[in-house]
Image (tube, rainbow, N blue to C red; front, top):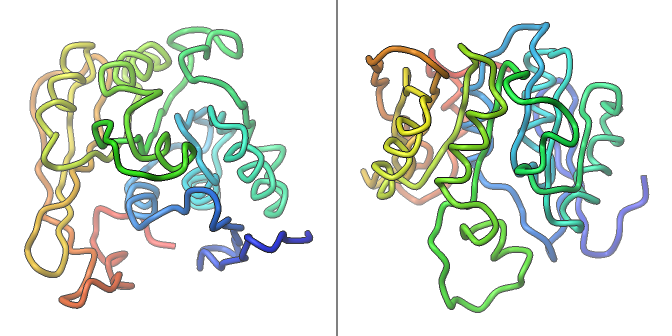
Length: 243
């Protein structure tokens, strides 16, 4: 597959997966890898990704779990085009269905309460005036997808007993947890990530539709060393899925 001048090919270091990133678009971060390693599914599950970006999470989840099908939504055409290239690059066209559409329109593709797993690394910053491209702004800031809408759509997609996986900005944890509870998605597992300087960065959760109260709080996951460099050993945490 021929790359453009702004694209680069990277090794995901998982079952031979490769991914194209484009410096003019939005490049995935360690958040996506952490979330992908936390997601656990059954082989017969049908899963949905809300906001697929370059496709990194769907690629990793499919490779690690070998699901029946992943249905991926990406609202931005430029990112959807890149995601499509990455799906084809890894020969996963038969296992990942990509739709360039708002996930809120999901009933055009499948009925309510029909999928087993939903996962999302959403735009979790409030809108700012920071100068950046529209593509990056939409990927990082909740302009096209609010926390309230995310919780509502995920719940509507899921079967009763289905799982929702998500990461969110730690300082906005209460918004996520309240939003999930309000629609009947009960958080059952959660942990926080921290950098090498002891700063808490993200909350990562698994919620279950229709479950009872009671959450297992897992140990914090340190993702960076003291210099800010991404650690390669965080896969040793026993609640993350190894390659």
